[in-house]
Every structure is written in structure tokens, then in C-alpha cells.
Image (cartoon, rainbow, N blue to C red; front, side):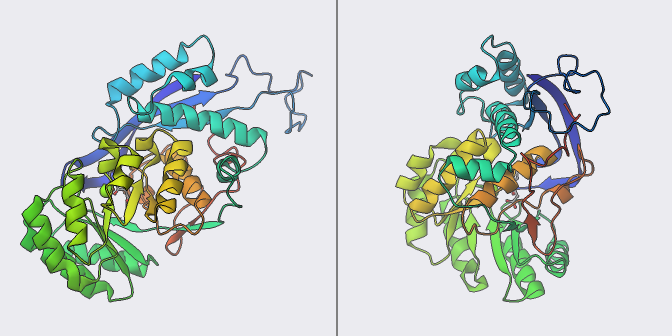
Length: 372
Ligand SMILES: O=C(O)CCC(=O)c1ccccc1C(=O)O
Ligand SMILES: [Mg+2]
């Protein structure tokens, strides 16, 4: 198991109610044989024999652990968990068993992903097909619809971003709110609706910024804008108040930060959400994320898979998770464009408001070979 740190800068800071993101730093995880140990030529000493399906070579896989404090462990805790995993004498599979998804979800994501990528590549199928098969799901989708992610800004700037996204083909937009006084946010969101018209699905993400009375007022005033949902109107732990808020308003509610604080079972039992935001990095891996999404679906709560604004390996993985959820709603996977740089070319760029789920094998065939 190999671990390599990386950092990528955002094109411009993403301002939300709780923080301003300027870059994303994490770790790439490699499993399988490493350079020097690997017998890449099939043992015949000829490295140029076109022997591409070398059945003797152990599978290799890549994973990404990109912590985001608040949703995951800190960067130093992630580094320590990966160091400990790499030192596990039982190898990566045993190390995965020892990794606690609650303590170190990003580290677990990195290792679980690398192992799943290796297994999917070995089986010569895509990661989404591998995840779906293990979960007893039908064939994954070829395409996943995505929402544009629009940060905080003045009403004019927010409306201009929204108009651009709609012109680019997005049919669902998510606008950050909660960083400004409610009256200004209402101006911003009205300006967005006016700019894009009634046919576009509009989501608003308050990132837990409102107190109970502000949230109540916000939802009352937002009702005429026909929002698809408001995400995390109240602080993460305020589940009971969110359930009451939801019962008193016609605006659908999605929960995101609550899942970093409480288990999927607790959040679903609170009956506080119409939709649940599924972040594979925060939930401890693609396998756990898909399981959470299906649990939500079974409870009548719509799963929405999103990145944590990850680099290309984890972002593409989230596309595979979304692709495995039958008839998935628009997902928050259009975050590659928020980065100024990336680890490799994007194997599934957004086109006309959707992304194609890569064929694999694994996450994206050999597209990430050599990164770790
Ligand atoms: O959902 C999206 O559109 C993109 C992902 C996103 O907004 C996000 C990214 C990093 C951290 C938190 C969040 C969030 O949904 O609050
Ligand atoms: Mg959110």
C-alpha cells in the first residue's frame, strides 16, 4: 500500500456559510504491487510484447482520501490513519477492517476505494458495476444528471452564475446561502429564479447557518420560488427542530451535515428530510455511501450523491456511486470545474447537465495509472 500527499487549488475560493475553501489537500492511496516489486512484463523480460492482459500480475487499484474537517477527520488524523494502515502486517485488506469509518472516514474512503478499484479492474468491470453487483442492484446507469454548484456572491453575481449554468445545459442548480443576512439571500435567490425561469430545478444550501426563527422565516419567504429543496437549514445536531420545521412548511428539506454528526439510521428515524446528501468521502467509502443511499431510498428519502470538492479520483468515484443508484436524482458532482488544477484529465466532464459513468475497468481504466 502506497500513500502520496497532494494538494490542488480551487479556481476561485468557494464561500459557504461556514468556511471559504481555497484548496483541497489529501492523499492518493495505491494498492497492489508497487514499482520495483511489480512484474509488469509477465516474466519474459520483454516489456514491449503487447502483453496487456497479464493474468499473473496482481490487480492494482487507486484511492483518494481528501479530508474536509467538519465532514471528516482532520488532515493530520487522516495521515496518521493511513500511516497506520500502511504498516498493518496483514496487508491492505486487513488494514481496511481495522479502519473506523466514524473516526477516519476519509482515510477509509481512500483505502476502500483502492481495494474496490483493484477488485473491479481484476473482474474487468466498472466500479459502478462492481458496487451494484455486490449490492444486488441492476446494471448501473450510463449517465448521471448533475447540479451546478453556485457559491455565495452578490445578487447580480449569483444570478449571472446561474444564467451561465443554465445556458451550459444544467437543469438543476444548487445555490449556497446563509453567509449573508436573510434579506440579501432572498434577493439573491429571487434574482436567480428570475434569471433562469420556472423550468430549472433550484436547490438552496444553507450549510446549517440559520437559527430556528430565521429558518422558519426563510422557508416561508422562499415558498413562492418553488425550490426543489433547502439543504441543511438548521445546525447538524438540530434534528428534532428540523423535523418540526419540515412538518410546518411546503418546502422540501435535505440534510447533509446531519449525516456527519449522526448515523444514517438516526437521521432517517428523525423523519426530518425529503432528501439525504450522500458524500462518499464523509461516509467512509463508496461501499458505505451506496449502502446509505439505498437505505434512504427504502425509507422514502431521495439520495443525492455529492463530492466534498475532491480531486479527480474521488470525484469520478462519486459518479460511479451515483450511477449505481437506480434513477438517481441530479447529483452534486459538477465540482471539477471549481478546481484550478487537477491530478489528471477528467475522464467524465459535465456535458449538457450530466456526466457519463466511465466504462472502467475500475474507476477509469488506466487513466490514473502512475499517479501513486
Ligand atoms: O452538492 C454540490 O453541489 C457540491 C458539493 C457541495 O456543495 C459541498 C462540497 C464540499 C463541502 C460541502 C458541500 C455541501 O454540500 O455543503
Ligand atoms: Mg450541503
